[in-house]
Length: 189
Ligand SMILES: Nc1nc2c(ncn2[C@@H]2O[C@H](COP(=O)(O)OP(=O)(O)O)[C@@H](O)[C@H]2O)c(=O)[nH]1
Ligand SMILES: Nc1ncnc2c1ncn2[C@@H]1O[C@H](COP(=O)(O)OP(=O)(O)O)[C@@H](O)[C@H]1O
Image 1: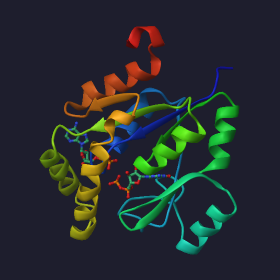
Image 2: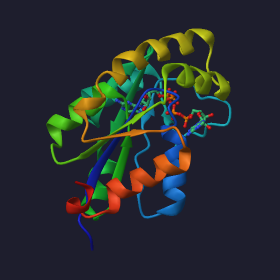
Image 3: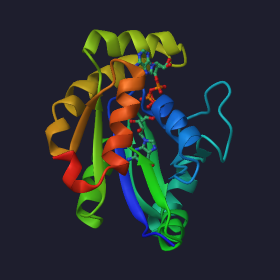
């Protein structure tokens, strides 16, 4: 059995993290992507237990109080967190576990799991990021504004991460994530 590993994928809302991860999983079904808990309302087509575990704020607060979350943060008016148990179990089983989380959570993981590989996905430009969020047509105007405000702060923290990847050409970005994950350390430098 291989050695378990924690991988963090961060980047502004709308940059393409979810889409990249779905393709990555298709190519590498052995990877495990953690399913987060959120107080956000489900979007059209989102499935409880698959995209997120959708919970109420009191339920979320209870999970925090009972230490059930590995990290958590408030983002654009909603709470998001990583269930601890599943992640710890998968790592124990030798799996590679990916957390798709925002900046605050990534900073928490840096402290608690310093050996985690941390990747940041950048948009080609902020205007393209806005096009993608709008093109996705899933968020209210208010939610879009809050996401774009966060995006500036998040992009300026990209240097805190081990690896920065611009998601301009999708296949190229996906290829760079694969290189970061699967090439021996010496080959990356
Ligand atoms: N800290 C933390 N952030 C999360 C978690 N799950 C999702 N996020 C982040 O929360 C932000 C908002 O997610 P979401 O509402 O699904 O919007 P989207 O990224 O625009 O699709 C994104 O940056 C996610 O990466 C989590 O468990 N913890
Ligand atoms: N390289 C790319 N070029 C153009 N559009 C992209 C690219 N990557 C993702 N997208 C699109 O951008 C939108 C936001 O992607 P999504 O995966 O939902 O972002 P995130 O999970 O980071 O919020 C989606 O409509 C997706 O199809």
